[in-house]
Amino acid sequence: MELAEAKEIAYRCHRVLEPLHAMIYFAPEAEERFTEVGLRPGRMGYFASRSAPMGAVGPGPVAATFFNFNPELVARFIPRAWTLADPREVLAARFAAADAALRRLLGDELAESEVVAEAAELAREAADGCVPEGRPLYAAHADLDWPDEPLLVLWHAVSLLREFRGDGHIAALVGAGLNGITALVTHTATGKGFLEPAAKKSRGWSDEQWDAAADYLRTEGILAADGVLTEQGRQLREGIEDTTNFSAASPWSRFGADKADRLHELGRQLSRTAVKNGAFPGNVFGTGSEKAS
Image (cartoon, rainbow, N blue to C red):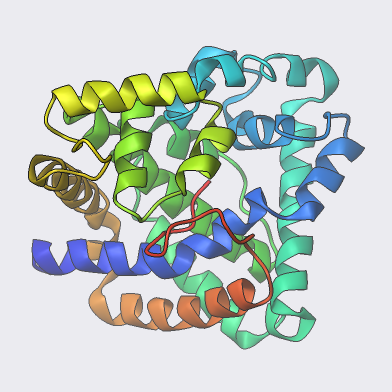
């Protein structure tokens, strides 16, 4: 497969599969399961559950691998979470939450259908093409045992593909000279990420910190006075996305175009159903957004 085709497939499949993973960050079932094993309500469950495959790590690795969160926010919850629940308990709760949430969003009939079974088989095969080198968060999740039920096989496979892509995306951001907050500001300015108030709130950045980052980006010629990306800024973000797609292409190249087209078709059907049934809240994402954590 030509590189240009593999890059396009990587992007297209990410777009339709991402909601099936990202719904976990908004599902009430997640907080229910996390509090049952001892975590505190609120943000703790997110940081603990996504980092749990790495073990009882400190706030540094979590902030580094999650990238665009304020490290001060991360430190409010990690490592305290590990004094309340073992990472293995948190992981079990996360899979239970994913199962319950997807069943609610898809309905039991679709959740147990051949559509999900086929999508799970294809997504697992695609995920098997990922490699761990330079992908710390992906590698930690890839070390987990595969679940047995097709619905959770699908969710885990999509999660692996997502974290694999995410690790490559962080490398592209670092290579472009961005840090966590400047990456977030520029992505918000594209209109494809969080809306600015949601970005600040969810990632833990104050108005003063956000404004300082925006001022810096203006001095670098990346943001215009009104906060819109300049031509230099647009080229920067386009280059980052191109590099991200390139670094995500290898498993799709091995997977093949025909299988990828079929997975895209199935993933689109499932994601549209989940979004239609309330997977994500309103007033959070831009009009061209990709649903993300």
